[in-house]
Length: 310
Image (cartoon, rainbow, N blue to C red; front, side):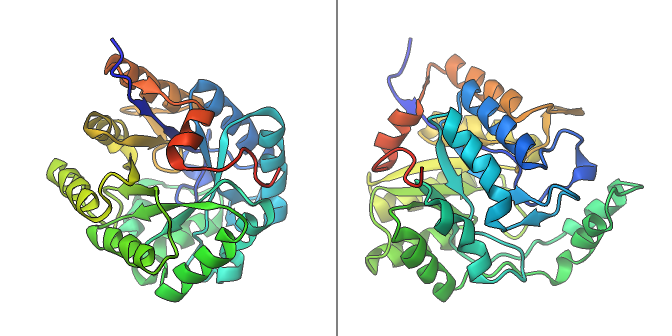
């Protein structure tokens, strides 16, 4: 029997953290990203979260021209909600970070609510004997000195410039303080309800994976935003399905996808993002939870129209 509650599934199809050596199935080219995005939408994702990669070597890129073929293909063939990142590498300018969101005017854009430093990611280097591209190894070795800045100025300009096109923001909260940052920008009149809060567990530099942390984040969000927010959960790697399931039982929406996790089961790489969406959809269905369609998700998240930039 259904509970009557709708759960929004987001799929983050490629991201910027994983590299080509780590999985042969990681989508790299615009064509691969579009194909996997459409497959994930057909499997039940209401939202597709986009990053772009250089099609020659898989390196993450903010170039809107690289985004364009995938975004255009998805918009032509699917009603799914498009969510474009506004994050970027430690040396990316704000102009780089928001270029794609400004050009394509998506319904949603992700917005990191605090600065982060990726503790321990250099250890990944020892897990692979050979790397397909030199930049991959260099990326991880440089982790101990890397900071991803999200200062008040950066967040303010992102909200004002990207939001001017009607785009709403999915607020990425990697720790409790990030929830208070959302409240700060809401008090300043820059972020409007219903707030879209995505709590991120288990990423280096952020809050840990323990169950009580999820309860704590939810309690703080309830105190800050009352009933005027939509909550989503994501977690990396082997913790993805467990934490998403836990969150869903507590009232959250969920995010899966190869940005966060390359595997479907222990030791078995996911062959597509659609496999991960289908897996979490099956879990949610077994919990008697209904899956939100893109249009239902639009209503829940306070989005004004389909394909703002289409």
